[in-house]
Image (cartoon, rainbow, N blue to C red; front, top):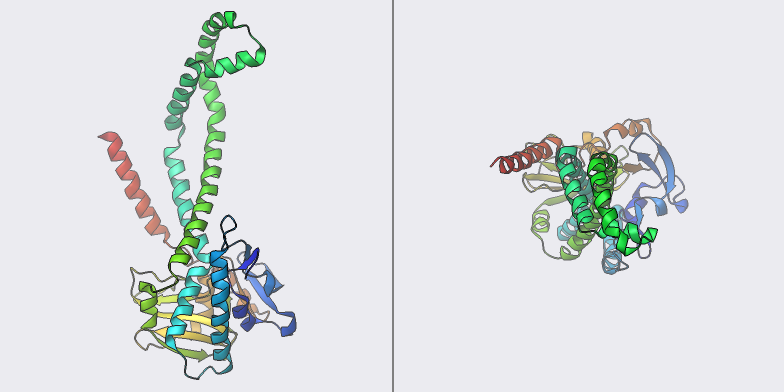
Length: 349
């Protein structure tokens, strides 16, 4: 993982899902939107400087060291799936994979962007922005800074400037409305672009800082260590989604790619090869093997990989992204409604 190209789905895990000649290390990608293609694992689940900010490679170096240990554990399980293993190791691997994926970062951005777009639509309206722009323009004009720059560029003698300013000011007042109308949409678009970029940077930095701080004991990790783990072998091929792990909760029909602490965790699924997955459960329940691939696809945000070309896998592509958001549409709408109601009540008081 060290270097510019950093894998958020480690290659040692992808090697359990290789096609045909394993020396070529190719897998088959099924993408959100219906596209399919074979791809070398060097080019799957990778992004430039995914674990680095401003050249700081601390997290990248840390994960490179961890990968060596985790690869050894996963390879041993693949070779001897029914041998004894340390459940503490598996708990750490589950926690590591949940935290490191691009799925988590994209979900933060997606949820945050929905809030941003909604707020922009509701609060950056013309009737709200116009008075602000007009106030700022008049302030700049009346203090002479804008006009002075124009006079300087035109080479107007200083002794003539006061008289010219008195004639220009009424013209500005007349035309300010049309000017505002001409710039208000570009201002809104510029605001959105600027905030989006800042949002991406902030989420990336927050994700990296969170991973750096959560490499030791953590409440989630303690929950995972209490699960009973087993390795399940299937008689059909499994997929590996870009969320890597996914979770089942009590009284919820759909699985999620993150441990949602407001719900009671029932079990965790971690595919490690085309016919093996690690299953951790709190109450010794049976794994839901029959919906494994469907839930893996739903918990992926962009793609899943598999060791073969299959119509069964193609039929799963329309499920990609359905369960990958941190908040449901209903949860986000409820939060937005509460925020908007609070803001409106403040305006009316």
